[in-house]
Length: 258
Image 1 (spheres, rainbow, N blue to C red):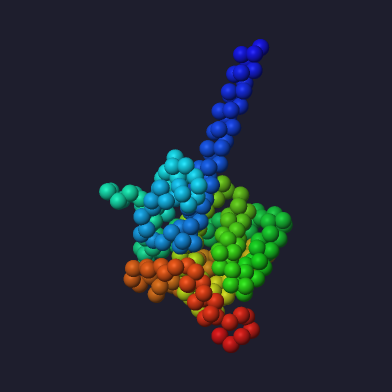
Image 2: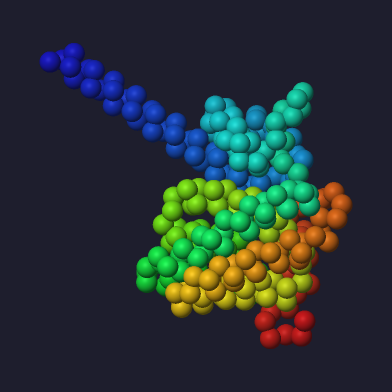
C-alpha cells in the first residue's frame, strides 16, 4: 500500500513538473515574441540567451525552445557563428507576409460573414470601439493588441482551425510592420486604416460574403503602400520610448487641426 502511494506521489510530482515546464516555455515564447513585435528587440539584434534568462527570470531550456519556435515562425534567424538574431524588416519580407495575408484573409472573412454568431459580431464591434479609443489615447501597444484581437476574432468566426493557425502567424509577423507604421505615419492615415476595419465589419454584420471579402482585400492591400517609404532602406529603430514621445508630440487629438 505504501509503495503504491509512493508511486502515485512520484507520478503527480512528474506531472506537476511537466506542467510547470510547459508554462515556462509558453511564457518565454509569448514574452520574447511580444518584445520583437513591439520592436523592443530591434531587427538584427543578436539574442543573448543569458541576458534573456536574467531579464525574464526563466531558465535556459525554455528560452532556447522559445527561440527555436520563433525561428520556425520567421521572427528569429539562426546565423552560422553568430547564433540567433531578430529577423530583419525589409520590403521583401513585407511583400512575402502580405502576399500570404492577401490570399488567405479575404477568403477567411468571406467565411466569417456566413458563419459568425451574433455574439462574435458584437465582440468584433466592441473591439473596434476599443481600438478607436486607444488610438485617440495614444496607447499604441493597446491599439496593436486590439487590432490583433479583431483580425483573429474574424478568422475564428470562420470556424476553420487551419486558417486560424496560419493567419495568426502571418498577422503576428505583419504586426511588427504595423507598429512601426503607427509610430511613423500621419495620424489621419492611421485613422483611415481604422475606417477600413469598420467597412469590413459592416459587411460581415450584413452577412454579405462577397462585400466582406472585398473590404478585407482592400484593407490589407493598402497597408504595404502606406509603409513602403518607411522601408526604402535599412530599418533603423531608435529607442521605442523616444519614438512614442515624438509621435505623441506630433499629432493632436481628434477634432484638432491636422
